[in-house]
Length: 218
Ligand code: DX5
Ligand code: ZN
Image 1 (cartoon, rainbow, N blue to C red):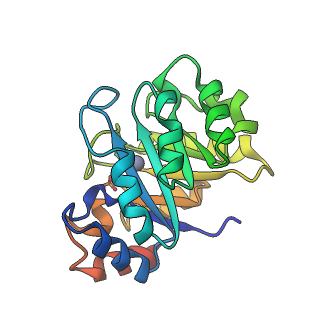
Image 2: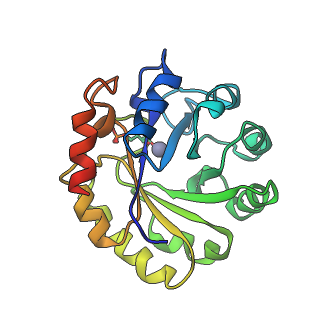
Image 3: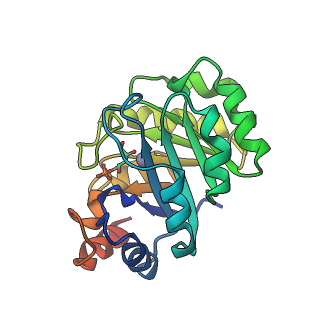
């Protein structure tokens, strides 16, 4: 299913009103809800853990897409699975045993995602394709919302589109997605677009027209 999906990142939502924010984006057509988990170690920022994921899970009617920017990953996989994640994404850079990590994610029965930082070539994922349901191409350096899209990553997206062939693997793009960059990544072969600041416009969905414009442009 290559239809374009929008995955708003609640990193840019109002942290005091996640339930309301999630209902608003789903009412506006969000396909997945993207949850950015940061540990202050793998990335220079801290967000939330499995307890928060569990608390917001009942508010999500679509897909809970959990992006783990943590190292190590393996000790926390079961906790995020139990918290209700549908997709659990780990970074190829997070440790020496990414294959084992993907096996552990699959063993929970959840979909597995593999994220690549901007400095990591597509080839790093080539021997892992039978282990992944989602490839997440980072188009910013992970850690913060609202950064500028890194255009050099478009070639990587094209490489993945070729590499994946007929496999049922989503290509998700994370970082700097706006109504300007969304058409570039979909033309390159992406089908899941994460958007934080582009959707929430700096802390709330009080301005649904911003989201509407992005949807229209995509
Ligand atoms: C960055 C996160 C992203 C972030 C995207 O580390 O993984 O999901 O929220 O935010 P925008 O869309 O504002 O670049
Ligand atoms: Zn993310």
